[in-house]
Length: 217
Ligand code: C5P
Image (cartoon, rainbow, N blue to C red; front, side, top):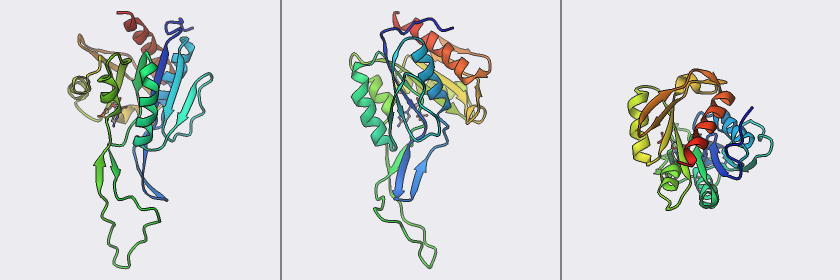
């Protein structure tokens, strides 16, 4: 049972990894199954919201009632999110966005040299989608995620402030990655609160309930 706490609200969610081309057959990507973002999309739909899921490449089916916009690169994810968020009430950034893209990506397959010399790839930093949406005047209520491998408490609160978001959800990368269960910690300006370990869909429903409670405040 999920109360319809998001009835009439528009929710935009990013999920999955991004995939940055190196050449037509090679990419730079992050480890992300997309499970948490997809669970949140389902939970937001159950709560009565109109949900847009901007998703990088994943193997998951689109949750019932959710509009999915498939993207590959961070640039594509950024464009889709910037088009969708001005009309949104809530933006939840769950995607594991690649931090860099390859500037000198090749339009044909890079061939191995007889000497075995690796290609000289040049990188440029991708836009921080969450931070940019958080800066929009009259923008949506923004929620970020942080998967850390150590010092979760320190890094997550630091990230919340750096990104300028009211709510940031932390989890331990090694425990949550590709798993069906997760243990979330919510960070806001009052401090942090840990939720017990539970299946991602159940955690998603709790988080959606939490967010809908904060919207009116
Ligand atoms: O900086 P970091 O990637 O650890 O921040 C995590 C949060 O920021 C996540 O919510 C992620 O979806 C979001 N993010 C983003 N655009 C980026 C990098 C991260 O929206 N380029």
